[in-house]
Image (cartoon, rainbow, N blue to C red; front, top):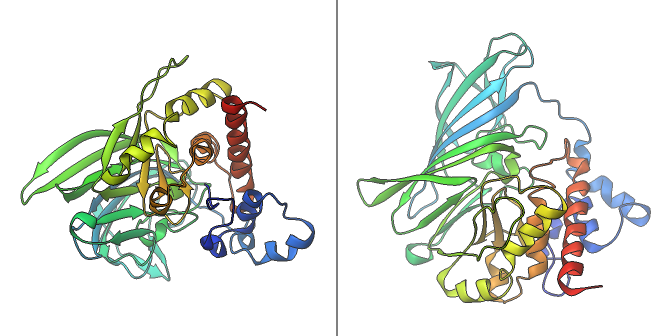
Length: 363
């Protein structure tokens, strides 16, 4: 994740950041004079307090997006490995209305505990269970629905734990899962999500149903969707030692030339550089997407989001691209077990950006 402005100034959104990510990007530590501030970080305050009862293995998410207004409808089916007795507890904002819930294909009586949804599940440790939750409403955060007509955009912005505002998931970095998407939206827009696009179905009323599949487990803060009028450009291939995954750039049409001729000109080379230095790319595809994220860049697995304001100001840079690409290995494929270790993925991503800068421009 990159949160710096055009000249390295910290973006206004840093008031909402966990201190360790802010401090690392600013080039300072979290000891000494920053120690009192560290204690005020909302994420630092969760130090080792979360204990996850069950292990989410896979989410199958069906999502209906409107061409106007702010309401969505969703069905989240999750497959679990049980770690013992007790219910499945899903994070889900109480502003969303739950219509029904099932466990192993049968309706159950669920209950609300604040912003948690509790589903009764019986089974022995190591057993399996499947839950299903149907709900609808207008998300107050996490999924940003803006504009109308040609200016309509819908983009998820989950980091650090804002997926719960629109997704019924176990919203913690320690519980990674694979994810499949079925996203219904107006045919006039393009849709992106994690993984590879497997099919697009035509529905009545000028709507399409987009199917994506990401078989590798990823943290929930990187499980995202986007919908907008997008122009896609396939980045030229490079000579890869490993099989080359497709790399593409998706932008609002007016920003396409700037993106492909500027910051993303060497996007495929950056991916190949890290593939050689670290390991083969951990996913089947990589897309760089202009979006409405509040951050300069957000490392969503397989579908990195970049702030649209950076495109308009022409300050989105190759350094940001390298940083976010490095996150596909550190942060996405390898993820911290708790919030207070987030400095690890930021540290590796920052280091990776420096490695690319040295490779591309010398000492």
